[in-house]
Amino acid sequence: MAEHLLQVGEAMGKAGVGTAEQTIAIFEKAKAIWDRECGEGHVSTARCLAGIAGRYLANAESAEGYQKGLEYGQQGLALAERAGKGEGIEAESALYQVGEAHYGLKQYDESLEHGERRLR
Image (cartoon, rainbow, N blue to C red):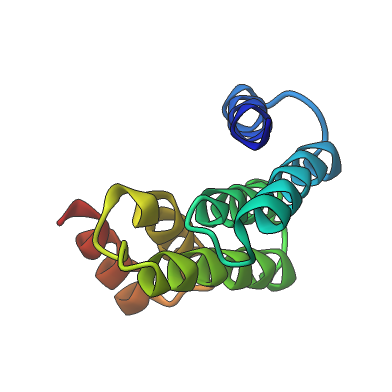
C-alpha cells in the first residue's frame, strides 16, 4: 500500500495535479505506513521525504519554501545514508531536492556539490 501511495504522490508531482498540501498528505501517509510496518527510518521513507521536499520547492516563492524543501531533502538523504544507501539510487531524489533547494537559496557551491554527487 505504501509503495502505491508513494507512486501516486510522485505521479501527481510530475503531472502538476492537485495541491501541494494534497500531495504532501499522500507522501506523509506512505511514510507513516512504512514507519509502522518496518520501523521508523526505513530506507523507502527517504523517497517520501524527497517527495515532500519537491512539493515545497515546486511552490517556493520565498526563502522559507526553499528552506522547508532543504530540510525535508536533507532528512531523506540522511535516512538513505544511515541505511548504507547514501551513494545508491535510494538517495538520488533526495540529492536532487537538496541541490535544488541550495540553488533556490543562492548557495551555488552546495548546489553544485549535491548535483555532482547525484551524477556519481
